[in-house]
Length: 214
Image (cartoon, rainbow, N blue to C red; front, side):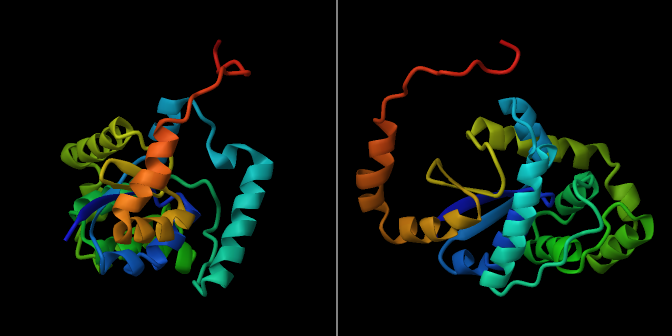
């Protein structure tokens, strides 16, 4: 079975929505889940987070609720957003890539509307996942370092947003890329010839806008 990497941050509602339909892919490919710090990716590319632009934040959550209804996915917004995703990301590292446990963390935040920053709720979530002392585990240097390594690895592969699936060195970004991945798996040669290679040969025009700090 072919392999791919699924990069995600629990901060993203689109990552949750993709997690809810990830079964569409796991029957066709071995998908390795990798938590990454979205803020680190944004900082690397010099981008603002979606929640830092008020009108964009509003649209994202309006669309997320609409998409949840469209796909018949239960979605309950967490108490506030943005929240600190580090505890959840480090907990995902601690459970060593167990997809079922990662999906449970997603459900806690986005299906149940849980508060990942609440001490008692986080403790219970960790216990549900078989982690006796989650507060201590997420402070381990090895866990922190592993999250940094996964984020750096994603950046080195060109990842610019979450969720992203990296397959055959190609990046499939976002919830709406889920069907793109399925089509690619079934028609790899044709898609490489008619879509991927065409874009790789597409010339880049001159930038009209100055980049930040220039």
